[in-house]
Amino acid sequence: MTVPVRRPPLSLLKKVLIGTAALVLPALIAGFVVWPRSPLDLGDGVNLGKSGMREHWAQGDVIVVVRHVERCDRSDATCLTEADGITHDGSQMATRIGEGFKALGMGNTDVMTSPATRTVQTGQFMFGTASQPQQWLWNCDKATLLQDAMAHKQPHRNLVLVAHSDCISKLEAQLDYEHAAASEYGTAFFIRVHRHAKPSSLGLMNPEGWETALKGNTL
Image (cartoon, rainbow, N blue to C red; front, side, top):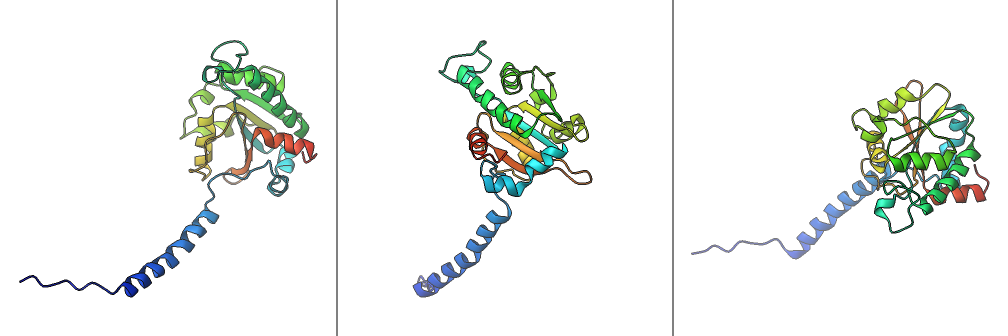
């Protein structure tokens, strides 16, 4: 004869589920607060001020990785020149982003690019001069990328690296933002270099963020 299995009353199951949710939800919320998904949005004037980015920039303690602008071979827009380069619209975006950097001041800043046509062209439209292409910015080795960037930065001089979205993602992961969303064309990731500690994230500036900051005269 089969012995019937006694099930716990529904009221007890309900209490268990409610109790479990009460324990799990605060932990998830706390985890999100402690471990944010993406770096700070510097396009917000309040965040820009809190980050201290302008002060660190003035001191020459910043590394910035900028993603190239719109690439021709992945767009229906008019190409600037070569198919592996950027679009005409992208060149205009690069010029606008360059105006943002110039508002910060480029007197104590070095610029390097990946050897790809799209990054070289982006750098030229942003800063008006050609820079020496760097093979390590093409490979963007996750294990050494941050160390490579540090090795090429001069004391008291900012370093702007025009590279690829993959490079930004790898640096974000190295700085504890493993789950950050993929960067868009023209996104700039600002990193503060500390003299006696690991570099830290200052935040991200998306293309529209520069325009907002310039209009509000917050740069």
